[in-house]
Length: 176
Length: 368
Image (cartoon, rainbow over all chains, first blue to last red):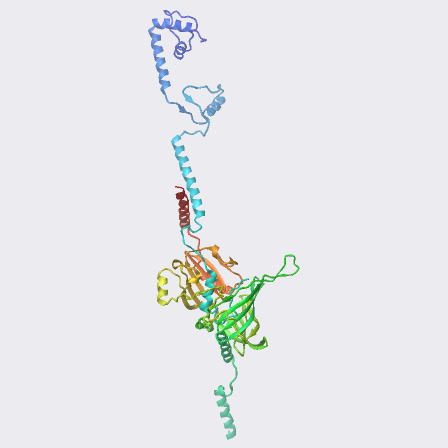
């Protein structure tokens, strides 16, 4: 740790700095540094209290649920930072998952699922309706279908009518 | 005024007041119409009174193209037999080097028709029958008649009637454009045959039947007609063009119809032409139509006809029933009649989709 706390601190004369305490909580002190800090914490109730409070805060942050950031947030933040002259976005890893896959609106997973279901139902209904319309143009198989005995009908007509009041020279059942 | 002059004036006054005394018996228009009507009536009855053999030529025109058929005919007081038919359509061979003929033939004995069937009732309401002179055919003197449709002065028929026997030797039918639609003429005629071909007896029974017509159909009376109407059958009181009812019958068993698919035959006539309207409950099996059926043009619905066939025939579907129209009316009147009868209307959207869903369900349920 590159700050003034790297040198051994006389436990009876100075407190441990916040950086030392954070490093202790994050497990980032070397063995020697940790030995020196532990010697100080044994004799310093003030630093011991600070360490306890810092560990508690860390635990509370770790208990928060992971939330997906709105799409475009990082890009918007980076653009804003560039405009402000600041260095690029921080990692912010550990507690916030970054995502950049959609409009900059609040994510609603339940609403998306309902829309997909409704769209699927609409597509299926449209397909069924189109198929039914196409297939409905013809009589159903169980509807009665009859043979047309046209030759017999012609004979019936000729017998019953003589072909007309003024018959042609011959009445024939002819066709080209 | 001297007595002589008074007598002349009186005589002139009488003659002027009583024209009938001056105009003696002459053939005015009314008398000519009566004569023409009498000739036509005689032609309608001649077939039932004569025995003869002959050779006839039939020509029908479809879209201007002629189709010819020749037949040998034998008639025994109305029992008509057609034998040794030759049918051909004149057309060029594929290489254009000559005429290509299609030869075929059949025997079609027909039982004698009901003498009362040829009613000319209503003819005078629709047509004018006019004398058109005289002409010789087959060395026989013929009276030429013209039958004109009064409503539009359209020439419908031209007939050549043998003066001696009343037999109709030639007949021409004209379409709505004034063009000949069909013609039938005797090419040879023997009015005193030594022997008639015994293919049929007086009752029309024959062992050589090709078209076996079993006379088992029954007439349907007025009460039956009322019952049919109440049952949902369509029984028009008349058909457009002045076609009045002539009789109603059930179709014969020779039609191959079972009791649950019986057909109703309704006969109509306008005094010159007759048509029969057949109704069958159910949709038509289009594959059962005789060969030669073609989609009918000029109608607003799907129908099939046999162009050039005599008698004409038309079949279509409407309201769950199959309709068949058979008759000798010209094609334009045929179309008017068919258009006035129920014809297929596309099902409404709800009905069509419902029917399609039922069809889909039958497919799915077969897999279940």
